[in-house]
Image 1 (tube, rainbow, N blue to C red):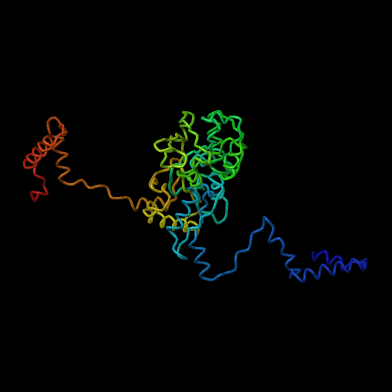
Image 2: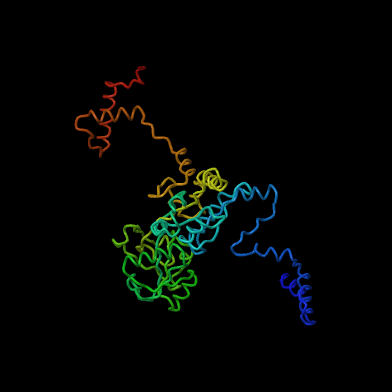
Length: 407
């Protein structure tokens, strides 16, 4: 704008109307505080240009930034956001430590965000998506860029249809419009994978689950799919009066390489599964991942700090009111083919329970059984157990343990 004004004012052929227009622009610019120096710095706001840092807030600002870590999770219909909130609720300690839950698009986009998005060090995804990215190479070699912290729960495949639709099997969705959830989500990727393996070709559409429920009611779509830990919050709210039910998914051999058999019961979804009834489905494993920053960097230390807080307080996650899926988590479970974040592995190695010590009496009893003619007897009655115990006492007197003889 200022370049235009300079050219205009420098022109020898500037008429009265043109001069009035130029002066009007200059006045408006001055009124809103635009200066030539501002105009010359426009590149700062280009989409590809770096955004300037916030002004220095002193030691408090440095402390907040150093002690906060963000985790990208799922949308409001999935359990992942609840898990991320639980992390914040349990671990937050004012300015000393803070977990910032971020609503995400789902497993596939979460891997991209952990891989590339500034400020995102942690995320939740699923094993099938990690494997897909590693095979495709579309994010480069992620084996040395993405580490895992811990396996989480198994995420179940929920296929919801109208109760009066007459649809009783997955193959009846062939050619019908089916919601695969948000583009880039783990559900979108995995639903396509499942249908491809089974040779079923629905017409994929993509929308949030709340919109999908409404479009099912009007008949615009035949079904909606959501992978997630049970109970999924949005599905747990459904009632029989909503006219929506879960479709059973048999455990087909074509799915066995990457999926597990699973079951929904009335305890999971009492509103849409009758008491004592169950619905078969399939599941895959969810996992918490992090970016593999070089050791010694600030971001590496931030993740290490999170691991120490998380692992040290893990027992709190297995108590109410935290999401039930935490009770299924085994922090030490390995994820085959992937590397655990070094500080997480070190923490587990340093906190392994000591190997149980075999007492001298237990060792004596084992030796007694090994030497006993006939080996282990039938102990189905109290009399037989008493007889064996008396026999062991007699054997002990004939074979005293060194600790009992002062030897």
